[in-house]
Amino acid sequence: MKDTFTLFMDFLRTNREEIRNSLEMAADSWRRDLYGTVFRNNFISAPETEPVTGKSISSTDSTEFIRELYNGKKLILIRAYTVLGKKIFPSFISEVISVSRDDLQQFTIMLMEHSEHISILEMLREESPDYVLVDGSLTGRIFGKFKTLNADGYREFSRKYMETLGEMLETASKKRIPVIFMAKSSESKLFRTYLLNLLKQENPHNQYIPEEENLSASDHFLVKSMAKEAGYTVPLLQAVPRIWSDGRFPVLTTHILPRLNDLPLKVDVVFSTDGQVPDVTEGSTLPGDVLNLMFWGYGDLKTYNIWLADVDRLVKFRNSEVENIYMRAFEREIGVSFYETRGERRARLRI
Image (cartoon, rainbow, N blue to C red; front, side, top):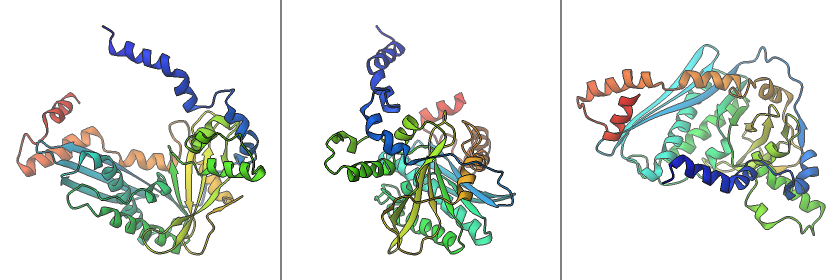
């Protein structure tokens, strides 16, 4: 009988070419011919950087802890920090709640992001930094969030989530503070679609774009596969629906490759939420100070942004903190010793 590792190796050997080609284009891929010239014309070399001095930069991140109780409910702890200099603006959410297993992941992500929005709002009510940095994607927070959640007291949470996000962006806009979202992973295909549209404009009768190209090849896949140096994609300006109210607002999106041997980062920038903007503007530009912030702020393969790395280290729940402080307080105040499922208790005792 084969052991599981042998079965895994069988799987890898059978599928390695397909897996490898899904992560990076093969050297003889037709996509290299398709995108070669148009990619090079729309990928810009990394700028020369200089130290960021004399600027105030806030950074925001969040963390979560979930423990399943024996009655099926979930104990959920959410913490977000916004750090500006030596000041920390915390936001904390705690719930003991029934949540559908199908909705738990999205619900937890939305709670974390919502806590971040609250934390940033608290900071903006007192402070006016030069930039607001947020870990994550803005467009990911806006699209696909309107869903009725099967969670006690949170079925209509999507509306509150959007209203708070809108208030945060509008507050920053009134103060003329750029809000910069940086995402480590992304399924975005905006840049790829932009390149395909350029190809079609150049040759309206182009027949060599395969139909499956409309369903695959993310922006990060193209950048990682085709970039020959550190740099960034031509920023594209989107008119994103102002879901919390009427109208639309501008979001400038680019993908930066801080080093050739690293992975791309998706960057969404909101400068102002007033005025009319087109759906996508060709040849949009990012101000030099924002670009400098992105590239100079890169640390290494583990530290994609020095400010976001700092807040990540501060906000994270540690096992010792959760077990020795939060869970002991839970036991002491609730007075029920065996509150976890058997599986949760076994896992905790192994920590």
